[in-house]
Amino acid sequence: MYGCLQNPAAFGHLVEHKVMYDDCDNEGVYHALREDYAHDPALQMMVLERWKPLADHNIETIPRHFPGWLNCLADHISRGRIDEFLKEAAARDFSEPVKLDPDKALRSLLHSLACMVRDHKSTTQVNDAI
Image (cartoon, rainbow, N blue to C red):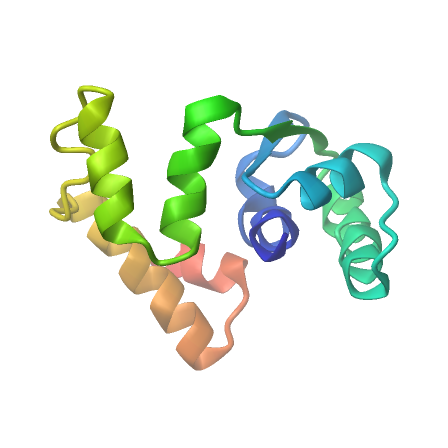
């Protein structure tokens, strides 16, 4: 849920006036995003907080829950079960599901985001610096 909350705040200016998919592997979060309501008070607070950046950037969101085996793979990753993730991925003919070799553009983006967090700058300031 935290990612679904932060995506419009951090990247909203890049997807203004567009549709953004909220992909998640947690069924409770999926239902909260779809219904705009959660029984859990902390989750409900996050659901409500995400409306401001969505409205500020005129972004429509569509929540999606990872289906079937994709959900299983996402669950393995989110729970730190990397061996199970690799085994399940290999069983589905993904022998190299993840290559930890980011290209230069991705490294540049991650560096900029890290600087933004470190310096508490707005995304506009970071984009102007790039």
